Image (tube, rainbow, N blue to C red; front, top):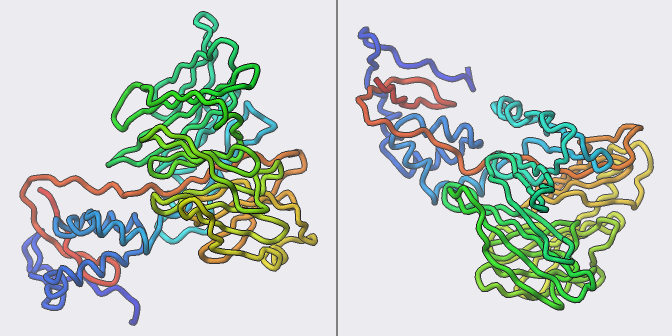
Length: 416
């Protein structure tokens, strides 16, 4: 019948040995360009890993950097779910909520992602972020003997020790991640201000991929720049530059390479107010950042182009909200979190969490507050990790057998 997978080839009677592939299969397998076009359409990173296990040739195609860039453009990593950390219960562990429905084959991935953080229940913890398949939680401990704060980042990140300068107080801290090679490096930014509020000191610590200890990357003292950075909304790291919201109508850019600080004004009429209606998002290259701004039922997306802002998109939310909200939608809309590369936004409205897929232009409700909850809390999206982890090659004799793979035959390497 149409759509059914054809049966596997008949064996020739010798156990473990298969007949040569049909001519049509050999024609496909021998055409590397056609083979690449087939593999790039498998649609999901988990299927791509299975395809890479077929043979060395398929693995070489699937793991090629140029191929992976094209695959990511066609099939970007999916949002598996999100962690919700409630502000009104600081000692409560963050909870995981899966994004459903998911395509077939990703159910097991979502189950593995939804591990519990109950082990840290009752401790002074804060979610630091979710990056590339890892959840980072900071544990705060004050060492009274050495009079310093110790912050341990979980998972697999060493403790970071701080001692504030005499008479100074901390005004801003944030942890950033950056993919480097096959791993992730971390940058920890801390800003201190003197009691008279006349100058600030910026300290940046780095934990390079593969290192086991933090080291000081740079220290800057400034009398007029980055004096009062805002802890919310958060800053973003793009390339070698950190963009941090500062005054209501400007952001500060810290260049990690040149150790230079500069300020950029926001578009006219846009600001970082207390209403939570403006947030930054990483652009899909090292050129800059997106600025997401919501006002009433209009979502505006700006892109920083050099030192000026370009309005790239406007989305009307009124009709989208009316489709699933029982009450009349109100203009009281807040941005809780924005995804990287201008992909999605989590909004708060009418005690609900709304997920807006910017590219697909869809809006749906993913969480509703209980009657006991007064404040929602902070959302941390959990994305499928990228790039995929491919099987390692084993130098040993192998024989080939046939089995169905999707809608076509594939050759599996059976290592002996």
